[in-house]
Image (cartoon, rainbow, N blue to C red; front, side, top):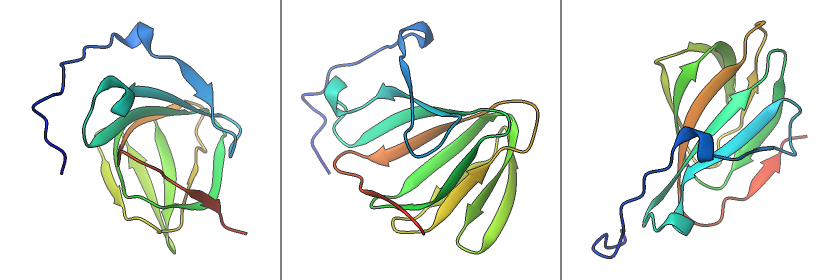
Length: 126
C-alpha cells in the first residue's frame, strides 16, 4: 500500500465531474470522481450511469471492482449468475471474473465503482 502522508485533500463538486461515453457499450457513461491524477494513492472512484434499455457486454477486468448502486434497478451478470440490483446494494467483482450489465427498466441506473490505481485491461468475452 502506498503511503498517504503526501496526499492532499480533494473536494470535487458534482457539477465539476465530466462524463464520457464508454466505448464498450451504448448507454454507459463514466465520470471519474477521484483518482491518482488527484493524488489518490491507492484507489480510483468512478460514477457510472446506465441508460434505460442499455446493455454492457460480457467482459473481464484485470483488477477487482467494488460497486455501490446509487439509483435505478438493473441486472448484473457475474459468472453464470444473474443478480437484480437496486439502490443501496453493493457488489464485489473479483479480478478476471466475467460480468455484464442489463438495464431492462424505463429509468436510468447509476453506481459507484472503486478500483485499484494502475492499469486495468478490459477484455470483451466473445
